[in-house]
Every structure is written in structure tokens, then in C-alpha cells.
Length: 258
Length: 256
Image 1 (spheres, chains in turn red, purple):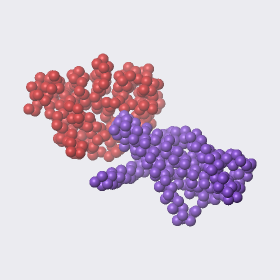
Image 2 (cartoon, helix red, strand yellow):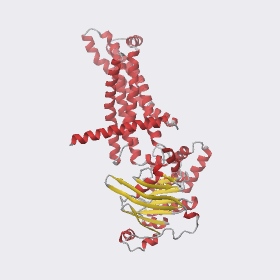
Image 3 (cartoon, helix red, strand yellow):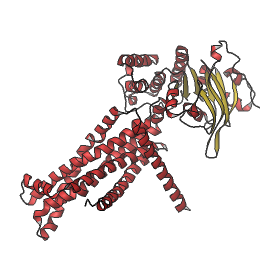
Image 4 (cartoon, chains in turn purple, green):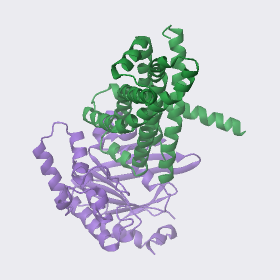
């Protein structure tokens, strides 16, 4: 049975209803394996959408298609009106300035200090940016994640939780309007996971971002999700609030909440 | 069946590498130019390779002289030792040995560095930040390798000749000025220029193969090792192939 839950039911502000990401009929296959099979999704402004699914179900493929790291076989991915798969190299770079991506592995540049990690995207994107402004933005980003003292350290000198925070700071430094989180709490202890969840919520409130969060961690899902999407067989199998899906009798949905 | 598969794999690899070369030229030509990173790579690839190139060149010059001497003594032309050694070093041994040492040091380091960046998603992180990794990582390294190997070869030749001078003086006494006068008198532009010119292609091959293998690395940490290893093997083979073609070309052009 397919759950038909309306994700728009709790919306109050009209501005919040405005879609920032619209995915239509997305298909992606690797060899004979169909990973995304007519996947559709709408993400609205100021909303956190959590995508749930089994390992290998295509969750990471989905967000990599959204950021343009993978090209879908067919379908549209509109982010602020730009159809990502159809964009040229330069237009894609411009579109990416509005999208942040937090990697599961953090993907910090290990040959650079924390400060250089944060400066790097800034100086690349805004070539004319003044040094004072760079300093201000780096300090602000580090303060946001509570790690102002790590500026001169190398990534190898930090713990897993600190690396995740720095990766989040780097993601936020370009002030993206949409953030894609690839399993942000995987591999972290419960306390650190909670801190990362708090950060995700706090940063969303502060910068009014919209997010797609890939996660298996049900605590993370419960705390961060405005809308939960269940990805099954390459399709959007169910969509609704955490509580709505939790109450579902559908066996495919229930197995995630047991 | 395995022959067909091997041929298909070889053709696929060749096609992918040809596309990679095309991307290098298109990325290298279009602004924005990564001048700062290019200078940084020139320092790492060129300056930091000199001690190794210098040491191996010195030993090569010394050993080559010691090995050649008995044969020349047998023919009664020991006095031609500086000429023989000079020609051998400048025309062939210097460029090829320097390129092989360079492939071992730089090819493996580029392959491992980019391979490690690939498997830890650092290259993807650059791409999603709107940084063009191909331009920043590949174009700069390939260009730096292309520009630095000729310089290293010239310096390596000079050090090898100095080693040869010491080698000559082990069993006989020849003044520094006489040794180098004999060497330079025996050399012409047609000996020096093609030898230096081909090192641009050696450098290009080493940089390109290292970047290609690293950029297409997969299978985790094992993949990084495979990238580094195959970068050295393939670039070493390419150095010999380019050398063979260069010798044929200089023959055809009458520069020999």
C-alpha cells in the first residue's frame, strides 16, 4: 500500500510554500540497476526534508544528481528555477553557489588548515572579496559551530565530531539557500550526533535555509525533519511528517520506525 | 575471449585518456588561470625534485665514465672519454634517466595525491563549491611537470657532467676547463635542442598520466595504491615510446 500523506498540511506562511527544489520524473540507472525510477519531490522554502531509505536505495545518488555531481538519465531537477541537468559548466557553478553539500566523509582538504579550508571556496567564488571580509566570514562560520579556536589546526588534529562541524561551517560559508546533508550523524556517538542535529536546526533558523537530509539515524530524522520522504525502489514511496509516517500501518514504512 | 576483453579495455582506456587530454587543453586555455597554484606546483614538482635528480645524475655521470674508460683504453682513445660521456649524457642518458626518476617521484606522488583526494571526496567537494577541480588540480600539475622537467634535465646534465669530470680524474688528471672544453666542443645545437625538446613531452606524459590515474581512482585505499603504481609504470613506458619517436623524428628531419 502506498502512503498518501500530504506534506503541505502544516504550512502557515505563504512564502514558506514556495518550492525551492522541484524534482520531476527523475531516472538514474547504473548498468542494469535502476536506482531512481520516476522519482518526484518538492522541497519548500525553510523546510527540512529527510530522505529515508535502505542502504543502496539511491539516497546519495539523489542528492548528487541535485548538486550536479551525477547526471540523471532523464527527468528535471529545478533548483530556484534552474534545471540542473541541463545547465552548462559555468551556469552550474553559479547554481551551486546557492546549494551547500555536507559530505558523509566531511571531505575536508587534508593538506590545508581549517582556516584555508574555509577560505578556499570563498576566494574562488568571490574573486574580488576583501581580506577583511574573508576574515569576518571565516570567524563567523567558526563561531557558528563553536570551533573558533581551531582556525590554525590541520584536519588530522581534530576529532570526528569536530571535523563534521568544520565541514558544516565550510558548507555554510557561502551562505547557501539550500543544503544537502549526506548522512550527517553517521559514525558519531549519540552526544555528538545530538550536537550536529542542534547545529543543523540552529543554522536553518538563523539563515532560513531549506535542506534535504539523508539519514538512517531515527533520532536525527525525528529532530530535524519537517517532511520525511521514504525512497523505495527508486520512487518516493511515502511522504509526510515524522509522526504521520510513524503511525502508518504500511509494513514498508513501519520497518524504519521499529 | 580474454583477448577481446583486453583489447576492448585497452581501447576504452585509450579513448578515456584522449578525452582527458582534450579536457586538459580546454581547461588550460580558458580563464580563470590558476597562476598561484601553478607556481606552487612548479616549486613542488621542480625545486623539490632537484636533490633526487641531482644525486642520481651525479652517480650516473661518475659510473658511466668509469664503465666507458676500459673500452676506450682498449681502443687507445682514452682521450676521447669526455667527448663520449658528454654526448651520451646530453643526447640520451641525461634526458631519459632524469625523466624516469621524475616519473618515479612525481608520477607516483600526483597519482597517489589525486587518488586519495578522489576516494575521500575532496575532488567532489571542490566541484560542489564551484571550484573547477580539473583546472585547479590537473591543468596546473600537468603544466608544471611539462615546464619543470626540461629545467631539471639541464641541471641534471650539468651535475652528471660534473660527476663524469670526477670520474675521469679518478685514474688520470684532467683540468676542469679542459674537460668541459672537450665536452662543449663536441656538442652542437642538433645534439642539445632535440634532447631538451623531447623532455617537454616526457614531462607532459608524466604529469598527464599521474593526473589521469589519480583522477580516475576508485576502490578506496587499494585504488590509491593502484593509481600511484600504474602512473609510474605507464609514464615510464610512454617515456621510452616518446624517446623512440623523437629519435625517428630527428633522423627524418636530418638533425642527427
